[in-house]
Structures are given as structure tokens and as C-alpha cells.
Amino acid sequence: MRRNLYSGATTGNMVSPSVGTSIGGLVTVSYKYKVANWSANTVGTPNPWGSFNVQYGATATGPWTTVQTIDQTNHIVSGTCTTATVSFSPPAGALFIKWDAFWSSGDYYLNFDDVSVSEISNTPCAGQPAPGNTLSNTANACNGASVSLSLENATSGSDVTYVWEHSDDDINWTPFGTNSSTAAFTMGATPKYFHCIVSCLYDPNPGTSNSVYVGVNSFLNCYCASNATNAADTKIDSVELGTLYVGTAATACETYTNNTAVPAPVIYFNTPQSMRVRNVLVLVAILVLM
Image (tube, rainbow, N blue to C red; front, side):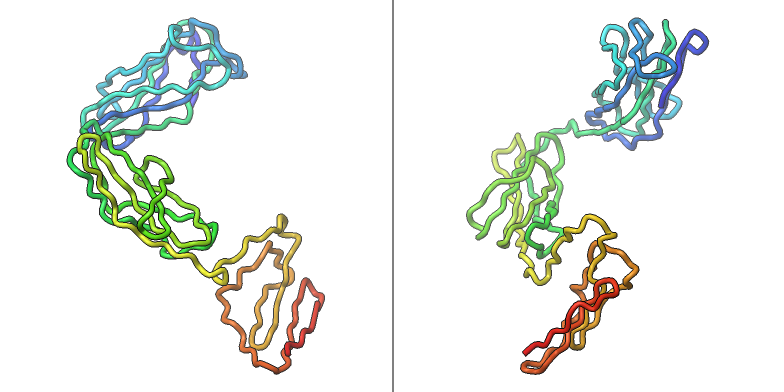
């Protein structure tokens, strides 16, 4: 959003839609802005240009409480965007954010972009955390695949920390991941157990989630990634072997076709079998299996 401010238009404002319902915690608003000369909007406007206030309210029409002012005393002249943040603790309830601008000199655009709003509880955690079970988005994964992990029970309040760990035997553990109630882990060739140690700053006893086991799929169930970089390079159009016949039209250019769900063909030992592979319209081979 941008507003052209000059001697003929000396004020402007931007009001957000409802950003949600505040719980009365610590709200942080982050945004990018710049003050740049009209009309190219690429050269920073020299001080003093004016000011703007960041405000919050319970409705889209206020009343408003000012929590930040940007003016010549804290603005750095630039033709590119600057990131600004402000934190405040509003009452619990609906929350709206407003930017209120005032011109003093110059002819410029006031630009705003990339607004984000977050909130954390001001109420400290209490007691020993009880995270419950460790949850995985899959029971088995392929080598190299990412597993998403989370916890059954949330731990409320501030000053909560999380340490995720993995193990080969559910006994010896190795930390990984970040201080978060969720985690991601890239599987290798061996199965893993996962759990999370959750701590509250005000209780000496951490809570450890019940571990979850994630197996590793056989390579037969893990489709290899295609190395093709251009669909026009095409692929094998069809394969015929015994009772198996799979394929797509020769005119359908694809980097690869995943046929892992196709039932295996019936092959008889010591019985000749014909195999036909087609690439575009060329018959490639006939194979006899003995």
C-alpha cells in the first residue's frame, strides 16, 4: 500500500482488517516501509518529511492507542524498504492495527508492505509439562524423505523450551531440530525413535513425550526421483512384459511416469517371455528370459 503525501494531501491512513482475537499477551507487529520521492519512488525523501503513528484498537474505527511514531528522529533516509517492529500488550479481544501519516514537507510516496502480527502469552508456564505422545505424519518413510513431528498436548504459557531427540534403540538419544513444539527430520537408511523433552522455566522437572517409531520403507516402495530437466526430453512410453502392460501416449511428454502401484506381472520360470519397450514410436528390444 502507498500514499502520495504533498502540500495538497497532508494526511493518510491505513487500517488493517481484524488480525484476530488477542489473548492479552505480547503482540509484535513487523512491517516494511519507505519514504521515497514522487513519482519514481526510488530516491529517499530527505528529512523532515513528516511522521506516521502505529496504533491499535478494538474496532476498525477506534478508539486508537499509539504505540510507535516514526519521524525524522528515528527514520533513516533510503530509497529501499526498512523493516520496523513494535511490541505492545493490548486488552484481550478483537484487534485492529492502524498507520496514521502526517505530511510536513516534500512530495513523496509513503509505502507499506509485508505486515505480520504475532502474539505470545504474557502468562508464565507453571508445573511439569505433560506433552503426551509424540506424533508423526507417517509410520514409515523412504530414505531421504522428511518426517513431520508434533506433540499430542500443548504446553501453555511463556518460558517453555523444547529439545527434540532421535534414537536407534529407544535408549540412547541425540538432539536435533529447533526450540519448537514441532520438528522435521530427514530419514536415513535405518528406522528411528523420536521424542521431545519439554521444560518450563519455573519447574525443575521436564516432561518427556512418549516416543514414536518411524520405520524405513523398502527401496521397492520408494520411487527414485527423475533426473530429467525438460519434459520435452520425453520418457519410456510403454513397457510390456508377460501380463504387464503400462504406458502413456507417445505424445504425452513427461519427465517420468510413476508405475509403482501397478501389480507385478506373472512370470514363469524357464519359460520364454517377451519384453517390449517403446520410446516415442521406436520398438527398442525383445528380451527372452530363461
